Amino acid sequence: MSNNTSFNEFLLLAFADTRELQLLHFALFLGIYLAALLGNSLIITAIACDHRLHTPMYFFLLNLSLLDLGSISTTVPKSMANSLWDTRAISYSGCAAQLFLFVFSLGGEFSLLTVMAYDRFVAICRPLHYGTLMGSRACVRMAAAAWASGFLHALLHTGNTFSIPLCQGNAVEQFFCEIPQLLKLSCSDSYLREVGVIVVSACLAFGCFVFIVVSYVQIFSAVLRIPSEQGRHKAFSMCLPHLAVVSLFLSTSFFAYLKPPSISSPALDLVVTVLYSVVPPTVNPLIYSMRNKELKDALKKLIQLVLVQQQ
Image: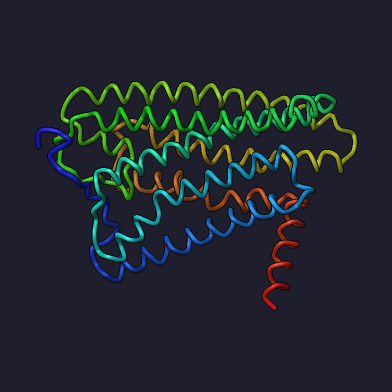
């Protein structure tokens, strides 16, 4: 195969060869996907319906849940369908669309996590200026900027990746079209262009990470100076879930894209990819609702309302 126009489909990773294990993979991914779908949908509906949650923090959380739904819906259903129908194929255009939507969700989510760190910083360290700095117009602009950054990243990475000549076959050693695995199919030095784009993106992401770390250093310094134990508990309950989500998201995605080739292996690549693409969208609703009394109360009210309507 001389270039990427020599074929019109890619072959994704097959989790198993036997029919029983294929169905087990389908059932496992179905359970994970339904959990992510339910959790994020509940958070979106609760925030939209409860006027007490119409604040900047929950507005950004609603946007994060939308991106989480987009992220996991881009990758998992196709893998489930392939296991159910005993196939590995994904069309060339489908692969490009999958990569674009996944990078879009990933880039938007990281930008949004950075905005959420700024929101927590202003709320705790600059409470008197919170209404001015985090007004409704400013929040909409920040959210729009996060979505726009995800779109631009996706456009750049997808265009670069699919302009590279591919001559190492069409077998992608992953359960979705992932950039590092597609680059392995390259047959020329042109793949270095996309590697350069990844490095630039990683530098920008590292800058955001430094901003998040500096924000939380100041946040925790301010929290520890709060005299009342109740006040400290409330501040920690707002910040710790976000910090947990950021840590999980960054550690797994950075390792997936920046790990040295010398420690790469099919099993390790698969585990890391599942950790950064499947686990965060599934556990984020649980993390955010676990220590948040307002959100838990809104979710309870929503569930009770649904149960009453069904009776």
